[in-house]
Image (cartoon, rainbow, N blue to C red; front, top):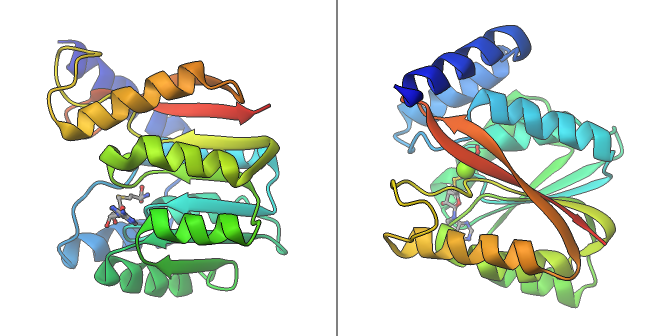
Length: 221
Ligand code: SAH
Ligand code: MG
C-alpha cells in the first residue's frame, strides 16, 4: 500500500515539476537500446540535482559513476558557460555512449569523461590538488566509504557532496543484507559522524514500484 502511495506521489511531482526534454528522453532510450541497466536517477532526482547545483553555483563538478550520462546532463545544465564537469566511469561502453550523449545534448564542451577506476582517478586528482565545488557520488556501493574519504580531500569549505541511493533494498532498514548494503550503511554512519561534514538524507522515490530511497546532502565545513 505504501509503495502505491509513494509511486503516485512520484508521478504527481513528475507531472507538475519535471520537464524531461527530447534530449533526456533520447539519452534514456539509447541507454535502454544498448542494453545498459536502467539504474539512472529518476527524473525527479535529476531535477533535484539540477536545483541543488543551481543553488550551489559551482564552477567545477565531479561525478563518480557516469553510466549513459543522464544525471550528468542534469548537473551540467546548471553550470555556467565557463564551468566544467568531470565524470568518472570504468566501463568503456558506458563511457563511449555517454560521450555521444553529451554531443547530442550540446554539452560536450563542458563535460569530460575520465575512464578508469574512480578510486585511482580520484587519488591522481588529489595528488594534483584538484578541488571541486560539487561532488556527486553514484557508483559501486561497496566503495562508497572510500569515495567519501577521497571526495572530502577534493573539497573546499562549502563544497556540496551529494550521494545517491543511501537506503538499500530490503525491509530491515539499517541492517545490511549484502555487501552493497553494507557499504551504504557504513557510508551513512561515516556521513553522520564526519567532523568536516554537515549532512542529511533526503528521501526519494525510485523505480516504477515506488521504492523509498534517499539522497545524501552534505556541506563541507
Ligand atoms: N549517475 C548515473 C548512474 C550511474 S550507475 C545516472 O544516474 O545517470 C553506476 C555507474 O558506475 C555504472 O556505469 C558503473 O559502470 C560505474 N562504476 C561502477 N564501479 C565503478 C568504479 N569503481 N569506478 C568507476 N565507475 C564505476
Ligand atoms: Mg543512483
